[in-house]
Each structure stands twice: as structure tokens, then as C-alpha cells.
Length: 289
Length: 272
Image (cartoon, rainbow over all chains, first blue to last red; front, top):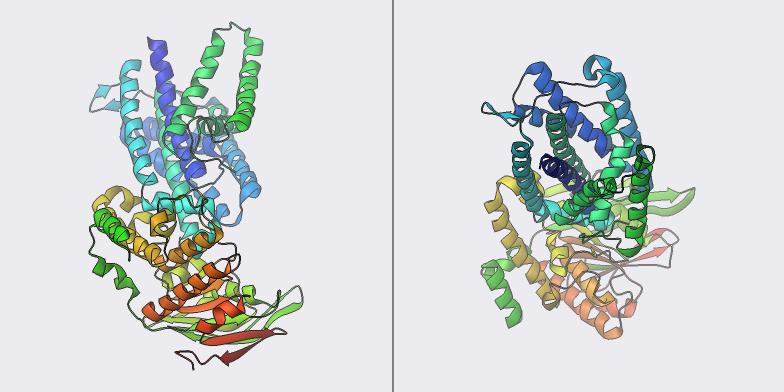
């Protein structure tokens, strides 16, 4: 049963990640490839708040969200000027930059050794020590964030993002403040993935930079593309598929040496098949171009 | 307004129709440009261009291809900056230096443009296309969208009523729920004009609104634009090659000749 709970927890964390990335890609048309870096910033900031300051669970999560939200300026400001492929290159550069900082700023992040001894969530003296209780807690948080995303999608904010995605020039010409909108979208998405990072840190109790590399960003991107963009159910579907896919491969009993390669092969194959057969994703309503 | 549109608007918005056209009440507006010049790669495109347009006037901007008509619209709508010269918008007692403003701020301040290639949002419905242009929407801030739901909903109802009124005025109310990419060229242009009107702008820059329209559709659109200028005192600067269709309703004509803009009054209702 613990194994099932473990999978559900990972799904819940990655569902939040995919929903936040969908805000940028699906609603705003901003192809962000530095999402794992902000996931890492949230994880590290929350872990430091918990281990160094001794603050509670929610202040740690909010601290992670705040730091990730503020540092989103690293990608949102260039997004004013760079578009399409050029912006993708910028976001890869930001991903590499943040990863390098996490790896080398040893005084704060403990470098490649990471931060250990992160405690499980504690709320009003109740310790969420069992995987079942963590599943429930993260499920409630996922639901809350899902409602927020749905409210944003159906608000004038969501409509303005959609207009910007469809035609930035036309959006500007009818009075939509595109630059300000980009700042807000990146800040919100980064804060949200920062929360997911905090949840990840609290669950695994140990973090190091390898969990927040470019490969992780590509996995997050795959979730959104495979699941589909432009609505709330697409990212949830993508997160479920890409969490369950490697687990399904376990049943093939492949030797460890080739299992990882087969997994990457399966991801690649899945992306190619999706691009050909269903470019809008399994449950998406918008085809990213 | 037809009965079906009235019923739909009152049912969906709850707003009395008398209030719907409030935003279109007459107001003083003026677009004034002086000495605008710009060169691209050493080639002089505009040379000391002067232009003046007030509320209720329709002006035709004409000239051969490549003479600088769209460049002038790009400058006046804030998309490019001139090398020299000034342009200002006077609206409701405020004076705006166009040269220093961004296009989105200009649209919010009272000046918006129609693109030659229309540029509707293809993944939105017709109504959503128009709603997207609603000015000063408080729900465009995520914080308000989440924590001021009541106010946002109330404002959305008002925007919806206004959007439907513009669509009705342009004969597109019955296509309000059609997708933005499922319209003919003529219908798309009407929706794009409704979207401009929704911004609350009083100066409209229209780049070839009749291009691609057959004779009947062009005549109908010209009639609607004339009615709009009459009823709401919008100022319109229209780039158009179909002179025969547009000239009868124009008050002014600006003609480009070798980079220089010449003005000629057409003897219209508000001729200077």
C-alpha cells in the first residue's frame, strides 16, 4: 500500500508542477525550459527555512514560493524582448545558471552534498509521518491550487494570457499590458512550482542539485506536452502518464544498466508519437506552435 | 438592435439596454501630428508629415503602395518611434504624447488600430475576442481575479453587455459564440472593429478595412463606419485603396506624394 501512496504523492507533486508550467505554456504561450530550476529554488528555500530557521511547514512553503516568484524576473524580463526559439535559449541559460549556483554555493546549499534531515510536514503539532497522511495533505493542497488555476483560467487574467498567446501584437494593440502580464505569469508559475519543490523536499527529506537539472525541466515539459495544454485536466493527465510510465517498465524486469536508457527511449518515443497523432496532447485543448 | 440580440443581452447581463451605449456618448477627442519624419536604412519614408483629426471626422489616408501609409499608422499607434516630430492625442481633457507611449497604453488612453491582416484571436469565440479588449478590467490582476470575485463578475457582466452591443451594431451578435477562426474576411473585419470599439478608444486607425470585401459587404461596412462616426463621434483615419467606396463618407483626405502628406477637405459634415 505504501508503494501506491508513494506513487500518488509523486503524482500530486508533479501535477502541481505541470499545472504551473501549463500557466506559462498552455495559457500564455511562453515555452519555459527553466522550470526545474524554480522547483529547486522552492525546495532549497523551504528546506533552509525549516532546517536553519526552524519555522513551520507553511511558512517554509510560502518562503520557497516567494523566493522562486521573485527570481522569476530572471526569465520574465528577457521575455519582454526575446520570443520563440530565442526565449527558449534564454530559459535554458537560466536553468543552467541556477543549477550551477545550487551546485557551487556550498555555504548555503551545501553544494553536491545537498541538504539532509528535512522533517516531514508538521501542522499544529501533528506530524505527517505516514505516507497515507502525506498523500491526504498533498491532495488537499493540489485541490486548492487546482481551484486557483481554474479561477485564473476563467478570469480576465486568463483571457488576457490567451490573447497574448494567440497574437501578442494584436493583444498590445487593444490595450493588454503584455509585459506586465508576462511578469505576473512567470511570478505565479514560479511561486507555484516553488511550492511543489517545498512539498518534494518535505517528502523525500533530502535534496541535492541533481533533482533540479535540465533533464528534470525536460521531463516537466514532456508532462505538459503529453497531457495537453490550455486546460486544467491536461497537465494532470500528463503528470499521471509520466509518473506511471517508468513504474510500468519495472514489471519488465530489465537489468538496472539498461532500465534508465529504456525509460528515456520510452519518453522520446512517446513524445514523437504524440506530436504525430495528437499534437494537442492527450487531454489538451491548445496546440503549442 | 434586433429583438433576439436584445433578449440575449438582457438575459445574460441583466443590464438595461439604455445603459449599454453609455460609453459611446460624445466626447472631445483630437489627434494631432506635426513634422513626423522617419527613414529606414537611409531611405526617407515620411518627411515632415502633419495631420489633424477631431472627433466625428472620417479621414482617408491614400497613396501608392510603399509610400508610408502603414508606417504612419505604426507611428501613430505607438509601434514605432519617428526620427523627428511630435504627435499627441487629446481625449477627455488629457493630452498624451504619443511618441513616448507604448501601444497598449495608447489603446487604454483612447487610440486603437485595426490591422490590415485583421489578427483576431483564433482560439477564442467572437464574444471573447471583443471581451479581451475591455478597458481597465480589474480581473486582469490575478489578485483581484482570486480575491474580488464579486466585483470582477459584476464588471464582466457590464463588459459583456457592451461587447454584445458593439457586435449587434456591426451585425455580428448572432455569431457571438462562433470561433474566431471560423469567420469570413468580412465578418472578421466587423469583429475586429467591434474589438476596437470595446477598448473605449475614440480615435480609430483602420488599415484597409475594405480589402477582400465584395462590393455589397464594403458598402455595408462603410455605412456602419459612417453611422458610428455620426452616433458616437469617433475619429477615424482610414487607409484604403477602394477610394470609390470610402470617399463619400470622408470629411478629409490625406494624400501621400513622394513622402509628403497633403490635406484636402472633402466638404463633409464636419469639414474644416
